Length: 382
Image (cartoon, rainbow, N blue to C red; front, side, top):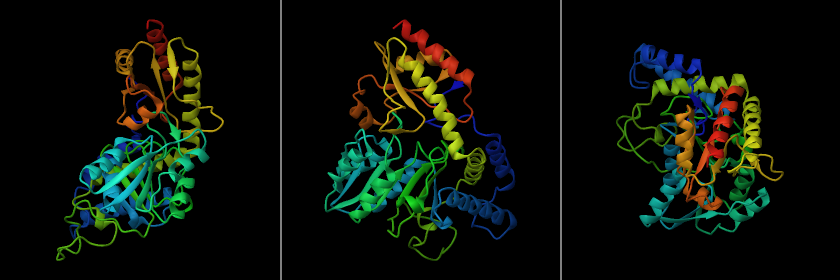
């Protein structure tokens, strides 16, 4: 199989990740923080080591503020619902994933809050102005994706964080498509809360995610339970990470995530981005010249920045037809609406959806040739 569905989850996983997960399953089988024996201590040390690695990787400067979740969606729910107060208001972009819009809409349906989507523009200044126009006196937070998971458009997170702080409100970033691909310093960016998947650009196993807390704002809990300490206390602990980590952690997954982060560091974030963007520009240039193919991602735009992914359609075919035709040729892509209805409404692709292509550090030139040849063969028959 030729794999171009890395925006959903990266595959294959690095050898170091696979070996680390296997080691954790055999050598770290005890529950961290819940035993006074050697294996429990070893599991706890492994977890803390990965916290420290993630804190350093994202320049957070506080390992205790690294909260482990099962995915980016859970992290976003922790923040959104943790910041929500009766009568409040949220602002997000018109490119957001359902991991943002569905929690917001759920709160709206329950009568807790309202929300609206800011218009993104062809320049960073217009995007910031779009968010500015949506801020109200009762706005609880601005939430924004680092890059659209459908079209790759990157948004100016630092400028939006500055805008939020100018109004005295927190800024939340969804790093689903940028963690491990675009460099980020939590301390320099001004981002208050960042949510990231472990299984995409960080190359960890599925079932891993992380919430990075860079704010004094205290999140309300999404759930409560055992934390391995303060067991005589009936209320949830106040301090991070225990406040937001109830129940047994995914030790093998977290250990594998640590190995994934080390792999990214060894390859270099800038080098990974350069490799993947080279591949994407090669694909974009070829697709733009194919008959019946419409490309929606302008990677060489002078005013916009992009993550290394793109979307296209073939005239006369639904995107899922194209995806199925590519799958029959042994090529894995993502087709449809990509859990991002707002983005498709913004680009006018709701009826057909799009075909999304995303490489990884493992993508080779032969993979690119096979993809382009297959798209050409499908498109010429459309």
